Length: 97
Image (cartoon, rainbow, N blue to C red):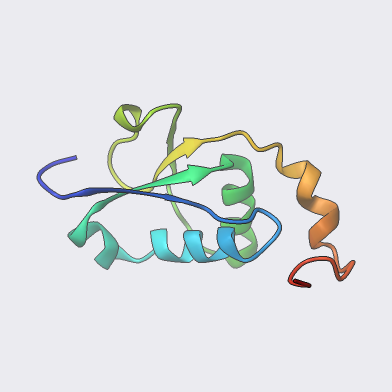
């Protein structure tokens, strides 16, 4: 990971806008000039979000920070993203706090 700082961030609420913000951040080349980012979250959900947004991100998934190398490191938390799918399908449950 070189001499840059390693920054770990969670993807946020899987039923909210967190995955979208995380994918957009990982698609910005400037981020990699500043640090080596590691995203902690559900890999399948992040891949699906990137596809829906039309953003190409080469995720490097691992179960530990040492296994993530290069760009877009992800520690796959395996959150079973299908459990959250119903929340994001227009039922009005998301964002009603």
